[in-house]
Amino acid sequence: MARRREPRKGAPEIVFPELRAAIDSLLAAPGYDALARLLAACRAGALIADVTGSTGVDDARVRTIASTDGRRVLPLFTSMARLRQALPPQQRPIARGAVMPGREALAFVVSADCAAVQFDPGPESLVVLREFVEAALGEQDPDADALAAIARS
Image (cartoon, rainbow, N blue to C red):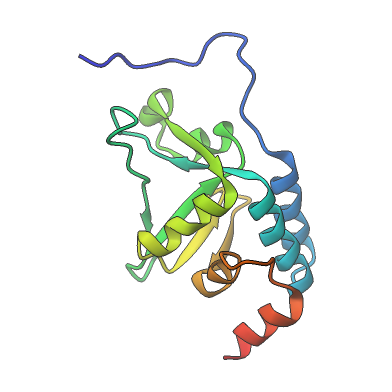
C-alpha cells in the first residue's frame, strides 16, 4: 500500500518568485510587453503542475479544471502553498505537485487539449489563452508584436 508523503517539518517551501513577480506585473499593467515577459519567464524557469490523487511517478496525471463554459483549463502554480490554497480544505494535506521546466508544463495545454492556462488559481490568478501559450512553445520567446498579431487574428 502506498503511503501518503507529508511535507517534512522544516523542509523549504517550493516557490518560484520570479514567475509570481511576472504574473503580478502583468496584472498591474496589462499589455503584450508584460505578457511576453511572463512567457519568457515561464520558458526560463519552472512551474508546478497539480498531480494530487496520483499514486506514483508512473501514473502521475496532471489535473485540469473546467471553465465556466465547460472548456478545460490547465492550472499551473508558482508555489506549493498556492497549489494547496487552490484545493478544497480536505484535499490540502494530500496535495501533490510535479515541479517541471516551464516549457514542459506549458506544453500540457496542447496535450491535455486545454483552452487556457490559469496561473495560481485563486484570488491573484491570471488566465492566458492557449494561442499565446502555444507561441511560447516555439523556438524563440515571443515578443510583444508577435503576441499582438496573434490577438488580431
